[in-house]
Length: 95
Image 1: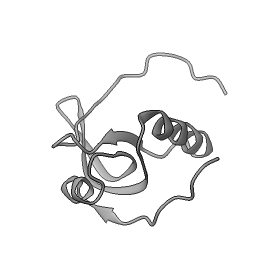
Image 2: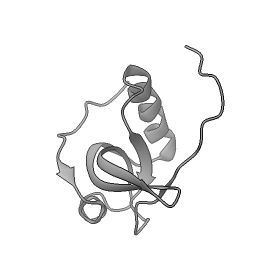
Image 3: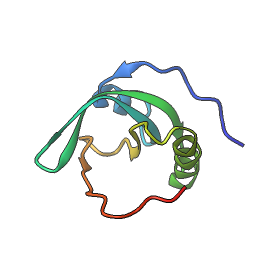
């Protein structure tokens, strides 16, 4: 069962780390750009937080299936910086 999403507030990564210490977070990039093969996420919305990566990834899959156009990430707050490597998609997507 999926927990209801927490309130969506645009914040910076440092604020997320302070509020959700030692947690997995499901976040959405609200403002982001590409730079040197990385996604630089300027503002994010925290959608939910979890104790385990397994729970976080299950929620990510659920949300991604509903809205695949959203830029969603699962990340752990122990990371000082929010670094997302860009991947080039070279395939055919099936529905």
